[in-house]
Amino acid sequence: MTTQNTDTVAEAARFLRSHRDRLTPADAGLPRSGRRRRPGLRREEVAHLAGLSLEYYNRIERGNLSGVSDAVLAGLTDALRLTSSETVYLSALTHAQSGHTDGAAVSTRLRPHILQFLDAIDPPAWVMNHVFDVLAANRMAKAVHEEMFTSTCQPPNPVRFAFLDPDADRAALDPTVHQARLAALVHAAYARHSADPAFAALICDLIAQSETFRSYWDRYDVGAGTSGAMFLRHRLVGPMTLDFEVLAFPSDPGLVLNVQTAAPGTPTATALARLATMLDPA
View 1 (cartoon, rainbow, N blue to C red):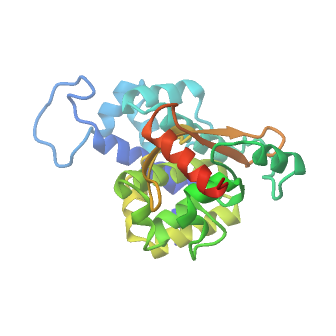
View 2 (cartoon, rainbow, N blue to C red):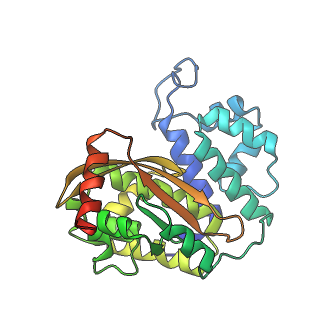
């Protein structure tokens, strides 16, 4: 991967251009005027919608976000119809270019109390670092996601598994939806960790080894991934839909807890109970 691909200026430029190209005049409430050589809005239209001069917007779309104010970011958010996750992403890129970061180093090891907490949780749960490596998991997580934990892609990592293990498709009910969500999650994390060598190595590996990841990466979709649903296919208990929540550890920057549950009475709750019984036969 080239230096340009890892640079936040190039990243910001591509992100903004991608989202400008997605909008039509009708989306933005503008009249369609004349024939257009390219899809999407013109730069002058975005500048008008954002309340900026064309010269200033051109500078921003070239990826130069240094010194951009919160008011300008709010204007861009409205003009480009950015989601909350995309807004956070653009703000993080701005802060990275301006040198306004929190300066917190990511944790590299697990405290014993975290491991105790993890083992005390009955539903599937794991602790993951900023490059999506699973540092620890309880036994239900290992049983539910056995393909990932036994994959040749080690340490266990849901992103590497989904894109780099040829057998990963059989563990997801809809691999396309699953991969798109993961790629958007990686993109969201990029602005926070673009200067981290381990994160850069993850992106390099994914882009170099997975054509599918490259196609999603070039779409510049951004997703928070802090809650939602997992749609799995387990070899023993069949399809499962797991609701997940991702919780941060304030004392351990970069580490998160992913807990997966199912509503009582649902087929997935029944499947989890069956799987738990297999782990603890009477």
